[in-house]
Amino acid sequence: LRQMPGDRLALSSLASMKYRASQLEAEWEQASRDARMDVCHYRLIKDENEHFGASDVSKSLLGFQSLVSNIFAALTDRPRERGRLSQAVIQTTQLNLGFAYPGSFAFALYVPSETTLFGGKFDDTVDATFRVLNLHDQKEVRAIAEQLGIAVLRRVFQWSESNLASGFDLALTWTNALGNKRGDSINLQHWASLVELIGSTSETDTTTHTEIGVLVGIETGGRNFFHLVVPNGPSYKGGLAAEFDKQEKWTVNSTYRAIIEAQSTVQYSTDKTKEDHELKFWK
Image (cartoon, rainbow, N blue to C red; front, top):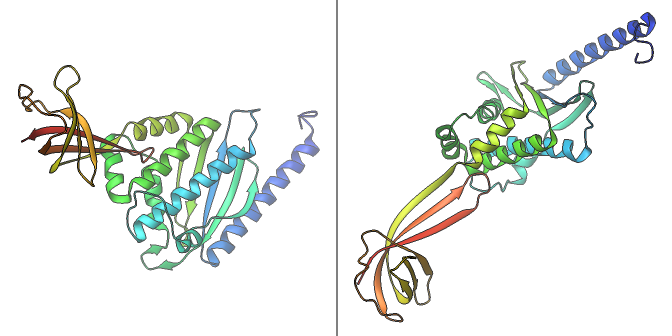
């Protein structure tokens, strides 16, 4: 067609092939529903004349698979901070390749399902998947962390980051075994907004507790620093609270009873935890 764009015979042949392909696709989807299969169409899109790297495509598919599995695990078991999945969950949620078809780089995936009067086995998982793709503010991000767990947010972040780096837009549709369909399209700008939003959101937990330990070091000047070591226990380093009496004289290598405020901050995008300590009072 590039050499003879006006060739009627070639155009007619192409139209016939497209029609036959659409017929076969419809027949396959009906056979999948009859066999109690959910079907997912996963279409990666890039600018014209850009190549699809095999590693980029595989990362995108693996990222989606990991997200679906983690959401399913959170809904059927419990929200997780880390994405360790049981073999049963991995097998249950495994997306199988039905076929690939023209249209940038597109795949038809399927997964064995079940249906009841109330819907399909993966309906809640699919609803949650499209919900995490449409996060708009940190309040919504924190709600997902509470409902589905930090592991799910980390998978969304990693998948978004991968697609953004590869330059992929995505057209995603999911049809359950009853024929009910959900779909959405995600462009590069939206991937970027998800990366920025999740990457800038964290969760901080503050606790106050009393420790008896040895004062290893203290500075009440510009640094406002302390270091306390609990025998056969933890070591605490941090700053001095505003209410801490900096005029008192404290003796290094002496034992004190300290009231310490601990702040534990978890970054949703990396699952890394930062510990900060502040000395409130001691005697």
